[in-house]
Structures are given as structure tokens and as C-alpha cells.
Length: 409
Ligand code: PLP
Image (tube, rainbow, N blue to C red; front, side, top):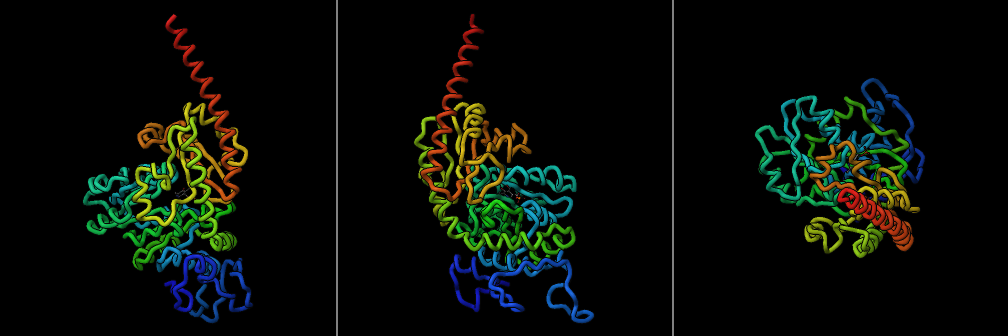
């Protein structure tokens, strides 16, 4: 249980810095130490100081877990070796014959884990458009145990109505899991809308500096917590203390960073929306986003992820991603440095092409993780790369036209 410090009701930014991070009682160290040890000496047989073996617990990890739980207004946190390790320990509570309803445009690695690992254990997955709660309801069968969704989704920034799905899950007694990686607890707290479990890739905004791989599961349900903790201890995918320390260090500036990510993302998305080479822009903070009102209802900010479709398909996208100078072409997101990626061939490559097309992951789609550099510099970078993309698409159109004309002759 993570009570606020000394029973005080502290704001998010204060808890990010202080929650479960008091001075170390043995030395007075201001910052939570890295307890780089695999085991803990017993005081006597059957008596320890709360720690016995570091796969099960480690004090640096405990500080991270309790701080994360507090930020989601939850009781329990389980820090994991990666976001996918967090997904695995939650899926690990299922049994053969269970059925899971999953958002159709979840992160490709989650799709791969469900389809190529857990489906081997006779667990069935149905992928639905979670923007439409009726589709979620229609997929429920007597075997359904769990609903799994991301909102906003990766990479199309689509939203699910957190409360509508929460009400449905409650009515059908389903475990409701939300991957809150994109929004972070600073902008969205799904437990308040009925979710039972939150999953995070702490690799992203929570740690915030693109220097660790980590994950977390958060819940207020004691029974689920015990099951998840059991699976984690039994399977062993735990984070090392140094990575926990880096995550805690990053979390201290989460509130500050998220405000900057959002400020830059708004500026970048407005610039893209006005650019002739851009076909469409997906950002929940834009008035043109079809679920902008829902975003305002369930989020307190819109985040730092922006996706857009560039004209000229693959060639238009290639010319753009190969020519940005500040936006680095790389997988991952949520760090202070801006990144861009081509989801179809990178993050979402594990999803078959026809399924990608069905979900809207086209060849011209580009995903930006807008960092906290100067917005003017980021926009100038995109502007020069879009000019090169425009040239590439014009050339491609010319070649296509010539080919058609040659065919006519
Ligand atoms: N969930 C989302 C939304 C992600 O974007 C990712 C990775 O990109 C993951 C989970 C998996 O996290 P990790 O790469 O830390 O295993």
C-alpha cells in the first residue's frame, strides 16, 4: 500500500520526487541507493529485514514500484525487466481455454507475444477496434477473461472510451488492462475509469532519457497483485537495481518533461497540418482529431506522440525519414531526444501487411516522438525533410505517368 507521504495529500510532481524516496535510513543518503546485491543476510533463521533474495524484492525496485503505484493512484506496483515482460506477467495469470479481447492496433511486439507465444498455450485472442465499444461487447464469449487495450494507440493515436469499456468489463466480470505507456499517469489514470490493471513500458516517458529497458504493472486489486507478483517471481523477468535507479531518476522530472513534450507536439502537429506534402495528421490535441472531445474528457493533456501520413507512399516516407537531422530514425519513444519511425517496416513489422493495412498502418505513415528540444528547431528540421519528400513524390509521379504513357504506346 502506498500512502501519500506522512498521510499528506501531495500533488503529482511532488510525489514523483518524494514518494517512497525518503533519505536512506542506514546512511542518510538523500537519493535512494542502488542496492547492488543478489541476496540479503538473515538476522536469524526465519527472520529477515523484509528482503531475502533480489529476484523477489530489492529495495531500489521497491522504491520504484511504490512511487509508480502512487502516480497511478494505485496500491501496488510490480517493476519488470521490460514493457513486454510486464505484458507477459499479466498474460501469465491466464490459463488454457481463456479468451482475450485486444485492441487491433496495439504495439506490434504485444501482438507478436500474444499470437506467437501465448496462443501456443491455447489462449485465444480476438482483435477489435476499441474506438467502438459495441465491437468490444460483440467479441465477448463465455470464455472471455480479459480486455486489453492501449489508448492512445501506437501508432495511430486512436482513443478508447476508458469509462465505457470499464463499465462493460465490470458488467461481464472481465479483467480490464490498459497499456498507459503513451499518456503516462501525468496525463491519464485509467484506474479512475474502471481499469483493473495498468501496464507500462518504463523504457519510454517514465524513464524519459532513452537509456534503459523497463516495464511495470500497477493495480489496486490485491488478488490480481498476488497472482502477478507470483508469476513474476516464478518466471524471473525482473529489472536490475541500476535500471530501477535510472527509472526513478527519470520519474523525478516526468511532470516537467510531459508538459514540454506536449507543448512541442502541439506546435509540430499544427505545422504538419498546414503542410501541402502531408495528407493527414493524427494527434488527439488537434481539434480535427475525431476523438478530441473524448481526449479532453479522459486525459489531462495530449502527450508527445504525433503520427502523420506523407504524400508519395513509401518513397515519400523514405525521403523524409532519411533526411531529418534532429529527429533520429529509431524505434522507441518518450525520450528527451526527438525520434521518428516508419511503423510499417519498424515497430509494427511483426503484424502482417494485410492486417496493418486494415488498421490504417500505411506505407506513408510516420510516427514522431516529439522530444523537448526547441520547437522552432524541430519544425525547421521537418520542413527541410518534407521539401525533399515533396521532390521524391513528384519524381515518382512523373516516372509513373511516363510508364503509363509507354504502356499506351
Ligand atoms: N507497450 C507499448 C505501447 C509500446 O510502445 C512498447 C514498446 O515500444 C511496449 C509496450 C513494449 O515495451 P518494451 O520495449 O519496454 O518491452
